[in-house]
Length: 333
Image 1 (cartoon, rainbow, N blue to C red):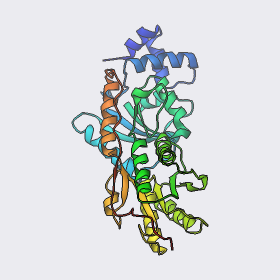
Image 2: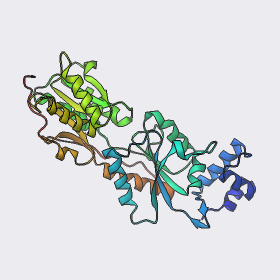
Image 3: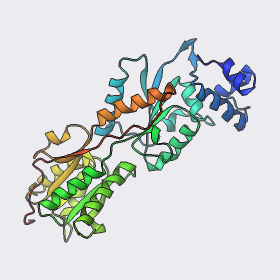
């Protein structure tokens, strides 16, 4: 087991100095802090509270929290299920209010007795993930992919299924096909947009930038999306909505406004769980197993904690399920 004494021996400083670093004492230089924390992380040192070792892993929001989203709910459930047979506990952290002034991320985790972290991020906060990984702390990134850190990123490949979804709409006769992606950038939504573009190009269809829309990933975002489509001069006959709750909100608002699904508007949604089965009509959707991603995130993290991860795991693939919300192109009312 790693101790303060072993860290002091490795770094060539006193036990008191190591203690000051671990407790974020202001008199310690940045160079010394980085040296000691790097050694602590490499030895998988975990601080103790009351002489009793803490055993936590953390689900960490590096930006805005999204606990209510189907993706996060299923992901958290998967992580929790995977650690059920271990002696670890799961905590949820918001870095913006948890990290102390002048404290490094590793110091924060050490102070809280966290052995490893599942990092929930987007393009806007990926630099935070890069810093945490650079410090050598055991962490797994979900919701984005970082160049050079592939073994620490867990995601679902949704590009090919997104392409298949748009090809499905083309096969039904649709030519004006829109896509809605989240207002928050991440690799997952970039993949879905890339699949959309590929399908249109493969079928010789022009890509109209007016049909590439953005909406918040919630029911209200889906409602606003439909209102924009209804008032458009040359509106689409089909749309691929890449967020689960936005897709559900769009279907509800469309029917509320008198649009028939799929006769007046075909909708392909995205689903992390079982939302497609609760919509009326049942929603055609690109599906991913977010619960399985949570279990995989914990598996990778546990191996990182033990320093036994040797190779990058192959990402699971999303799939298309065709249901009742898509149909042949008709006359828009």
